[in-house]
Amino acid sequence: MQARDAIRTIPRGPAYAGLGLLLFTLFVTDGFGLAGGADASPQGAPLRVREFRFEDRADGAILARDAASGAEVQVFDPGTNGFVRGALRAISRPRRQSDVGPEVPFRLAAWRDGRVTLQDLATDRVIELNAFGETNKDVFLRLLLTEGSK
Image 1 (tube, rainbow, N blue to C red):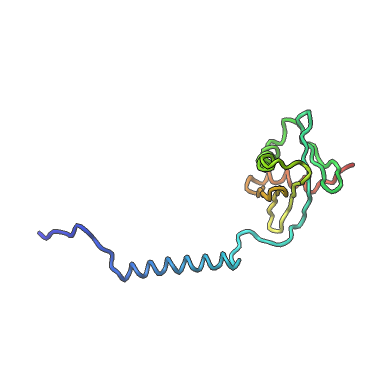
Image 2 (cartoon, one colour):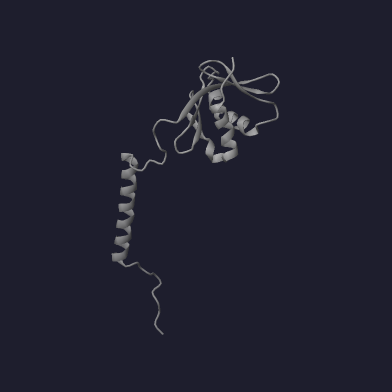
């Protein structure tokens, strides 16, 4: 009976071919990333943009005001709209840590590809609201489309 080698080696030809393929793949994907050829987030102007200021009221409600006119757009009553409250709390955390006040508004935008985003203009932090489902996204979309009252 013949003893097998304790150490097996990979043939050099296939090893070099695999390494070459790996390097080629890294080069191509990095090249597209630097040139902007394969951008995952579509750019361009959104379909609709509006800036808001959100205020906490003493009764626990959240008031959404149009940042340009100061008009009340919507009141989120206490104990309702948990997603809106959570999203605003999450996006506002870095703002509070930086001691930025409410004077800098939030930007709500609807995009051509169906995305809806909420951006804190003070920190440039953006939440892709589509990631949380249609129902949650639609709450913000309705806010974007609601006219305010003085």
